[in-house]
Image (cartoon, rainbow, N blue to C red; front, top):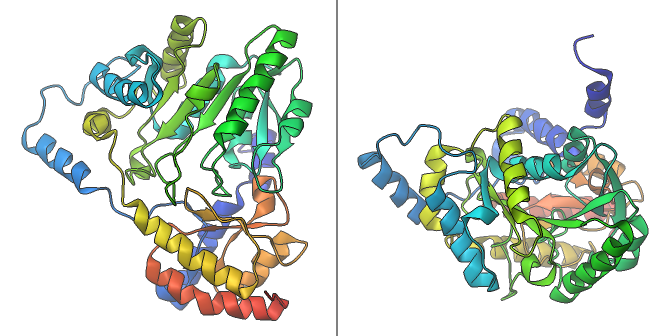
Length: 396
């Protein structure tokens, strides 16, 4: 057998997102790219901001000697300090470079954190719906996951989380703005979560970390400000990347930031650096570290995403689709008109609409739309959505 039974089993239940994306590649060859409405993958269509291009140009014209060599496994000190300075300004907490580890994207960051904190059999609570790869990341490091469904409005359900916590719980993994719902967790819910975990920690005798996955932190709408998990939860760790805010998903540049209030922070830093190296990442890409050092407060044009959200949200709700209006990220998560969300996705394919079932995110009965695509494709897709709604008897 070429691969392990375990991986064979994972492949059989692998991400629907990638499967649908690959289906889109086939359909584009048949019907032309302008006639296929692919809403499957969170792969930003926007180009990086002008400031990134200027930094790249400056570095290309005046290269730094040794700029492609190894550095500390934690990353360049100047890059870590730049991240820490922004976090300190935003939270009022004494962040330093020792609270920051530069990583190969948010996925790499999350694997490093899980490797550092989990013993075999330890548990991580996931809030459904959730990014499907979380389950595999936890398994990578001998952990187990427990699912705590969110409330009907997709905000945190404290009773659900409390019920999922056991003596083996090591972390609660949250994602705000959320993929796939676009919901932003309120400051009040984060405070309540912090209070709950402090109570639980007294029973378990060990810290329960909140790991906040935040690649969409700068993509928020309607004047909303993203509450900082560091302000509300003592044992908090943020994993994030510049894949979305600077539109650099292929460059794999991100970081881990852990709260200065965490006890034994020096040991945690040492563990994170060790795992960053021994998982084979070694260090975050050298060139990208240099480029993002001065771009910590830059982002792509958020208004572009908000306009696309408004087109789809207003159009689809007018047709009769039901959904919570997203506050951030670049996803819609409507209710499926059919009880079987996978069947609904297959019916949508007849109209060259490529969507992802909610069951792929641990929340059956919904479907995800990623609107980080060309605006014209969104506009072109509306008659197809209307035809689909008509076939299924969706009415307002």
